[in-house]
Length: 355
Ligand code: SAH
Ligand code: SF4
Image (cartoon, rainbow, N blue to C red; front, top):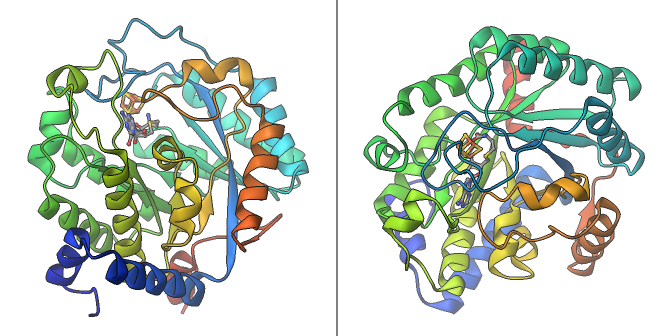
């Protein structure tokens, strides 16, 4: 089986035979080693604000949710966290927050990127995950020194997307943002939530082929997890109670992404750990090669809960580092310290474009 055809990918997503599944997971792991190397790269994740202008029906920090206290980390705190990552040899950071488009926000992000770049001698890689913005804003942040951008399409099915978002959220607009980001020169990552209410296996197969069609460099997928006080949870209160099943489906998606897309970076996301204590390590054995340790200051963590029972809420960055590195090393993986670990997919395209 080559996993380049829809039927093969669907077969994998529906596979129940655990022995055959194990063989395919091993094969995806081997492909990971072959195409992106043996190292796992770290991205220190700074969730610097839960203020958001949008109201995605599944998200715990959606604007219409009046429960979480809203916060914005101070510039100094964000820079300090970035420097902590640098000193701890993380290689890169991810700046993530709710979506804001006001000029104060846009300007301050530009300044923060510049300061981090300056204070780390240009060495710390910066990924942004700040939602949909105008092309000029993406350009401005790229010029300031950010070089990767994560924007999940959430689902490649336009009709499902519309069921998961209010009418003023646009699937087309989000897709266009991905195209704009690529054009500007970012390494672009996208992804979906797995196991959403109303999502079919065919939708998931489409998602994987959407990643291929969009020619993205990075994939960040994770299970959909219920968040109290959200319209989606109210509509589907008993959805996907079986965590083992959801974890298995998520791992199948990661393996399928590796087998189909080969040389992209694939993240093993925090949400996998919410399903099982070693969910993230399992994903590394099925084709993922990126881990994003949380380095948000501890005092803010309880307020950035996109879903319920998020792990690492009480831990400090120091503790997360020790716990994660031990776990990664204990399963025989090597960490790429002080390296950007750029997507080889992206590097190849850059090379192609130079000639
Ligand atoms: N506001 C930005 C970045 C922060 S949200 C954006 O939306 O792009 C980051 C990701 O969290 C989203 O893309 C979504 O896929 C995920 N997310 C939100 N609510 C979730 C939930 N209930 N379960 C799992 N993932 C969720
Ligand atoms: Fe805001 Fe992102 Fe949550 Fe949507 S998923 S409500 S844009 S933080």
